[in-house]
Image (cartoon, rainbow, N blue to C red; front, top):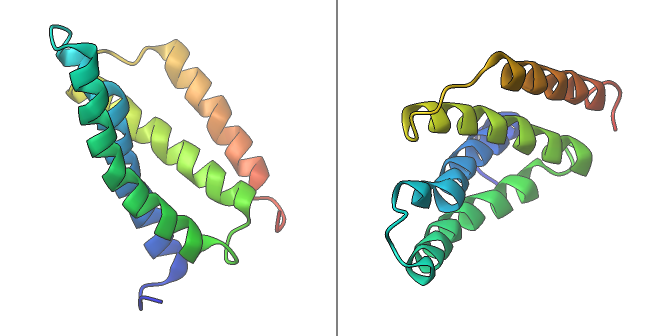
Length: 117
């Protein structure tokens, strides 16, 4: 196992994984003229890197975190990455409704981390 603390390693890998995932799932939205099969193949290629990072993140993190906590960390990171991506890459504004929804999800995440899980 690498020498970084488990939480740092796990969260770092999940963050990098989610950056790839977000581009795989939503990056093609800027290329609507591209044939669907091309964007599907490109998305699969990008998603490979997501899996290369996601699987070790969960392997290293499990035991320190419960499976539910790992999934919660992944979802909070995913929403954070997506919010930045949609604003910076797609040029879409995050409104108060989305912000409020994300805040409720963050509150749910807080509950997941109360106790050991």
